[in-house]
Image (cartoon, rainbow, N blue to C red; front, top):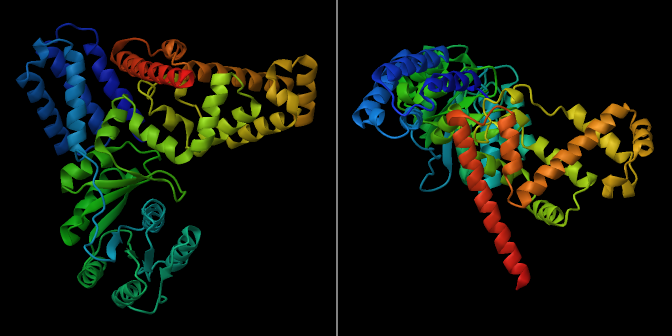
Length: 480
């Protein structure tokens, strides 16, 4: 997660407030000093940090938080609200033109991931809205830029309009828009040229394209890993083109997160999407409130649910729920679950969306290596049908045979069977609405106390109540 370091430091800043029935102004000043240093270290714009700290202090004093009940939690809530507001308040959607096509002009410096982002956005609209996009290759300067866009178009099965590198980009855009209107494309993405830095020639060309295309949206693609340079880039493009929004790429890289926290406050323009990976599905709507919750270690349950719905087969999920109720979860189901989890993305990113898990030390190096999945596959495929369906028959001699058949040491087979048993046990608890086992696991991982622990336990209790309620409904339905 891009904000891992910031998240850890902010939670450390709140540590002195935990468990206190009363908080002094000195306590608040000390906490705000740590928050200010954490934000500056994350490469957040200095003016933005100063205004943020001032707002939090004024609200904490103005609402008499220091004299109220649970003042520590109230201050966390104020920080959460201010972080959300700093990043834009709420998610911003793409505009839609009154009549087709909706024209989206993509701009940015070289290396920011502009062409890939064009493909991701077109793919998203095609998949979610049944859109018929057209991509216009208007970058005639960068070597292989047109080829790259055509490869992206082929990958997502979206047409690309190009006229080579000898035609003026403004003319290419004119001709491309004519074709879009003839073919009734409802979205057009203009992949414009970039430079290593902002220059007069680039801006003049982009202004001409803007004049001709009259785009509904002008989206700036910036690399989150460039920190404050990303904010300066956004300011430069906004001054000349009046951009409508930003797409932040490489948010999964080694970045301190300052760009995401500063861009809206500095330019007044919202972040619409974030890119985290190279796949065409690796593009997420930017939700300031959810991002603020993740930064503060409170998880992001809504995004986790959306990711699960997108990547998990609903029919298989229903079949699995039935198997859990019948206690017939087997090794084929185990393998299927591992593959679905892998499809959802890096495991530590998924775990960070669960309340209280974001900065759990046990998750620092959690990852699912594709090679590990292949080894587990080899072990399961070395089992007989009876062994896959009835794991309790796996005695020592059978385990040794599986080890030989999969070319794995016996220790690996034993470890894999233990993992299976743990997953089966946990899923049984969840299926029965019993979250006590999961709460114990969290406490054992050092998440039982303090504000983070309270938030985690509260989330667990809510989940437990909901699952027990669903279980009662199922039983009532069966009796009928």
